[in-house]
Amino acid sequence: MIAIVPGPIDVAAVTASVGDPAQGAILVFLGVGRADFEGRPVLSLSYEAYPAMAEPEMRKIAAEIEEKWPGTKTAIVHRTGEVAIGEASVVIATSTPHRGACYEANRYAIEALKARVPVWKKENYGDGSAWKENRTPNP
Image: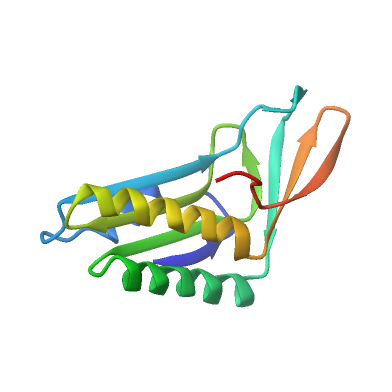
């Protein structure tokens, strides 16, 4: 399951998509809206993406994960539109035969997504808003 969706993400469906009796570990990462950015209250987030570019890049990331950690199943779903504080903007699920690879694969997925997938975030404050790149400077 690789998708850009316009509304809330069905976390259970993303998780189920990587389920397999041969896998001994499933790890689910939820990126959620936080209420503060550098001391400034954030009321909500708004995301925009270009699915025709974003989804192929997300599929490349999943393929890279399969190559680095054979047998890994990966699902990546990012939403667009208004996201409330505490609500998931991205869900990444990975499953592997053993837990160590599951942690590594899942972290690889979120870091690669942040670095490469064209998704834009606007933080909405009580006194205005600011567009931010969907990237993190630290791993």
